[in-house]
Amino acid sequence: MTRYTPDHKAATRRRLLAASARRFKRDGLDGSGIASLVSDAGLTNGAFYGHFSSKDDLIATVVADQLSAQVARLESIASGEDMAAFIRQYLSPQHRDDPAEGCPSAALLDEIASQSEPVRAAYTKGADRVIAVLAERLAGDNTRARAISLFTLLVSSMQLARAVTEPSLSDEVLDSAYDSALRIAGLTPEPEGLAEVPLPVRE
Image (cartoon, rainbow, N blue to C red; front, side):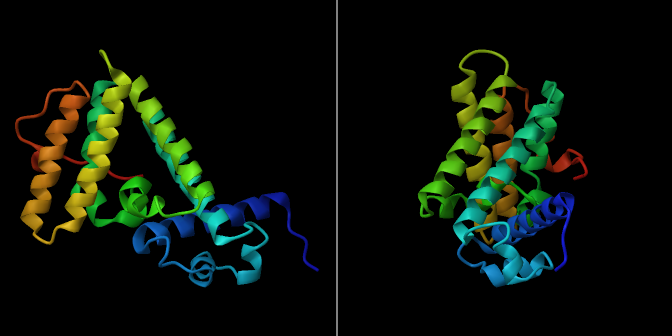
């Protein structure tokens, strides 16, 4: 029997988490079976159960992992300019058109409410941490309330921009949300608007 090192097992788990996150955010939680998830990661069904006890276990872990990555991104914000860049990137056409590589909340929130308690608990913990880190990076008063408003605006605006079929309306949603998000963050909207602002390259 082949024996794998702890590093190999950890790397396999990370590969499965990354592949599953992309699949979930692109096709939805209910539209992704275990067979397709392990196939995306280049694994077998048997290998899946060496890492997760069930699909629910995987979903809860993916949700926690994705939100932790978002927290890490927010923790790198050190200035108002960094916050503006984060908001620009979040509300960009690139993010709208590529949900598989984007925010887990914008892609999955409508499904989270109907998931199992462990999945909802994982989301609750992660979302609360996102809000807390956002609040730490806002200047002025009522930072937690403003952080909740900012998080809600970003997520719901991205969902609306993806839902409508008229491209110009979708762009208007992103533009309007960008200005509103900057105001909530205590930053001055740029006159030229979102469409004229160069977007940062995704790493």
